[in-house]
Length: 113
Length: 111
Image (cartoon, rainbow over the protein chains, first blue to last red):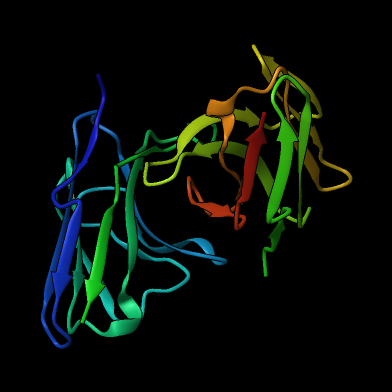
């Protein structure tokens, strides 16, 4: 069964900490995405990547960075966590080609205190 | 912006039919997806439309009118397990595989 795996289901971090959210896919997908999901706002794109070492800013990249050193792994980094980054973070991957939908990971619920 | 609009909440009765609408900006349209998301779970793919018309998949169908910037998801013979959030997502040209999501429609199926 094809999978997108996010390393943590729940995470609690303190304000100012550096936070790493990991995502691994086993489908050899070229594209990987990080979204955050908040009530009333839906899914908003933070960063995405079309290839190894490639990254593109999404709609809300401020306060975040990403790393894609290997095709299967896409990491989201919160350089200095803040309370307004408390959210559900969803990783997704897809094949190249607009008609391919996303496969999502189960999500990481991050709370910054 | 590339606003995608869908109703926030809907309620329907078990066994009935429900239609969830989605409107979007037509400029640069390149394809539309519907996803289902149960509470606390990841979204799962339901359907993809790029040409006008109706795509049917069992109890679920999705319709697209590109000229009107309009889509709907039709759920027939509703079951309690269909209670979920339904997300409309659009691909725009120049965005590659990037999808822009609506805020989702929370569907509650009642007895």
